[in-house]
Image (cartoon, rainbow, N blue to C red; front, side, top):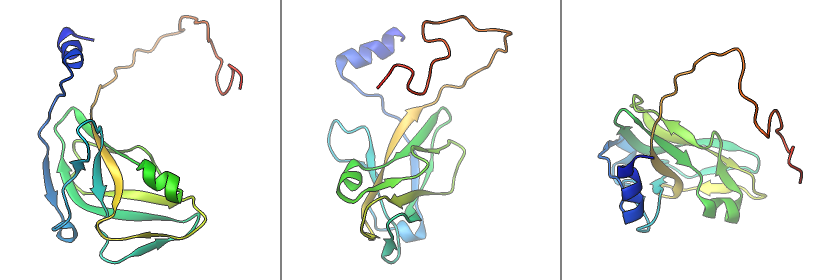
Length: 162
C-alpha cells in the first residue's frame, strides 16, 4: 500500500470520485443513489417499476432502476443485495455482486430472486439494491511452467475442516 493510501485510511478520510448520472424516462422523480449513513459504503438504489411486480417464491425478475451512469475509466459499480430484504423476505440478487463497467451506458437493472416463502411485491421507489463504487486493477498474466509451493498447496473446498 502506498503512503498516500495509508495516510488517508489512518486519517479517516475517503476518496471521492465524480460520476455522471442521468435518469431514464421511467426514473425521473426517483431519488438518485444516496448513502443512508455517514459510514455507509453502499448507496441505496430504487426500483423504477411502472407498476407493482410480484415475484413468486423461487421466482426472479429484472427490475429497472431508472438510472444510467458514466463511470470513469478505472472504476466499476458493484450492485449488491440489501441485507434487510434478505433477512426479512428472503430476497436477494442473482449475479451478485453485479458489475457495471466504465464503458456501459445502458440502464442499471438488478436481477432479484425471491428465496422466501411468500410472493414478494416490488413497488415503485422501493430501495431494491445498493451500489458500491470501486477502483479496478487490471491484471497482466505471465505464463509459467510451474508455480511455487505453499503450505495450502492444492487444498480447497473445505480442506481445513468444518
